[in-house]
Figure 1: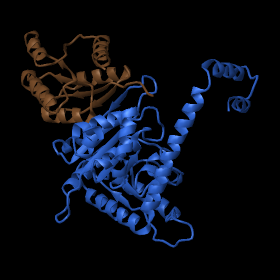
Figure 2: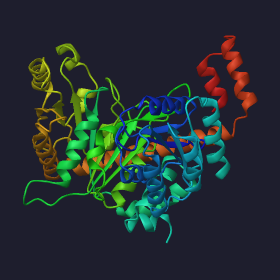
Figure 3: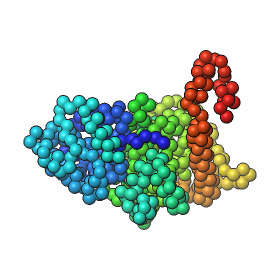
Length: 134
Length: 320
């Protein structure tokens, strides 16, 4: 029987069009043996939650550079829960001011990865969060 | 309610979870497949294949929209999409990007999109795609669109799975010699030349028509029984703008009618079931054989092969 594959949804919520970071992370996770579903730019929280449900992902990663994270992320968390996906690990990357991190963590985000985070770090933490939970 | 009952009742989270179990070939997945099997065999399975970048995902996006919002007088149909993308042979990971082209379908409860990685299978689908299709079928989706890995010449598994196979080409795919090679073009029930706003579209269209005139109509029916023949149409589309999509949808409907009228539907169904069964037998026999052979014995024989002390056929005789 094949080993458990970690499935990750990489999403760009909101209106900023800078998806370089999301693509770099998607590529790193792919190279770490994960199956990464890439959804493209300008996703609404509803679209992200719907895709996470249909794809039954273990992890949702959101890259936000627009500054709208305090609006977007809690809404995604709320929708994931409403859909019954309470066990999904959510991480956020991009430009997130230090002071906003506690609020994101409080609404259920597992980790916030700012610029300079090494791929080793997030790959290892994602693996631990998913495989440790199963 | 257990997982399969919830899927049959239309629970989308249960459907997503069951697809994961089925994709990972778990005991839970297998048990559920047994339970839903009586509810399968109703959906029209439409395969979409063709080379990478020819516009398969965009075409699937447009077709699904049309099935959801058909011309007046026709009922909308529920659409499931299974989109397969390649797995890295090195890391085992995959980047599944077909959803990027399907954002127009977001928010419609009559659509369910699932991405699958090929996980090492070479025929354009993954080993469990057929099982995932059965799950969608049982869940009540009337059309299942199956998009293969970007395929070159010989990834023809889709023809054994789908009732109707679309092969998508883009202008500039090569000359007439490419068109008369065996393989992927042969499996087309409908040929689509996408990106028809690009230069060279007439050449591609002509090469494909020439290929069809030379070879078709082939008779893939029951021997000795005179029957209607299907001539694959060549249709030009621009998936980005939606041009030509209605014609493709009409051709898909015509092909479904033809399959049912001619008895070909039933024949393909039998072939598909036999194929699936043979694959299960193969996997089971291989697993049973492997569990009866120790790693050391196998490694020993491989070492002898490497030293050219025995031949592969001689090793086979020792193992079976």
